[in-house]
Length: 141
Image 1 (cartoon, rainbow, N blue to C red):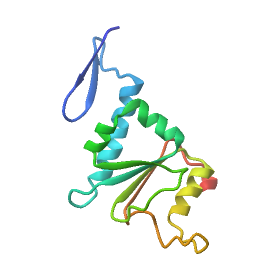
Image 2 (image 1 turned 45 degrees about the vertical axis):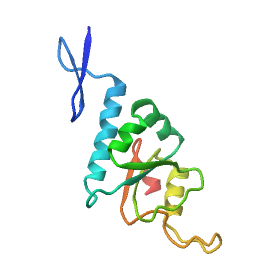
Image 3 (image 1 turned 180 degrees about the horizontal axis):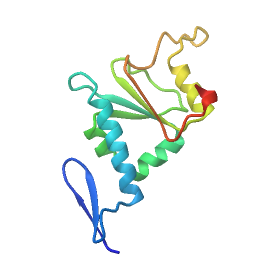
């Protein structure tokens, strides 16, 4: 079966002679674009957003959507959840992570003041978007 992929300004679509089909890459790209569009559309004005990912999420993003596409969705920077990060208190944050204990613990730490490290407050602005690559286990709620 031959596939024909066409792009337009609003989304990626794929058609085949027996009906619509999409590659896995196209499906992931469309899902990520929708997540980014839905998140940034909720921000007032022309605001930018920080995308924070863990290693697995970075692999998903790198294989499906480019930095240019991220910038089109007002992503100012992509940061690694597992590393020390600079504060962007004037920007919203979108976390895209695996649903595991380590990722959840690091997200909580981003929003918990810590006198031992002299961390004054949260790393990001008041708007948070939290997405997991899969179902979050009940014990992590």
